[in-house]
Length: 111
Image: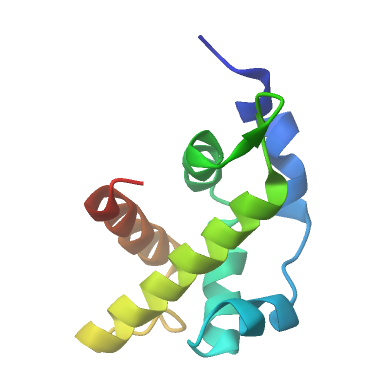
């Protein structure tokens, strides 16, 4: 069963609306510039956004976009932490590599 709120058109505002550095600073202790870089990559990955939307809190059966944005920030911070642990830099990595790390983190966390 395909939910209308999980279609690309419904999730497009998440990909098109940048998340401010101030919001990232309030949400995580990781370096805001690194997290913002990873967020900018992940929010354009429809599979990541759709999976976060599927698991996000909902109101009237549709996910709350603010909760999805917060999950994007949290996932991006986890990617930055993973980079720090392994001496891998998301800044110098290709976007595909950043997405692979994010998908791996989502699998390991069950998200």
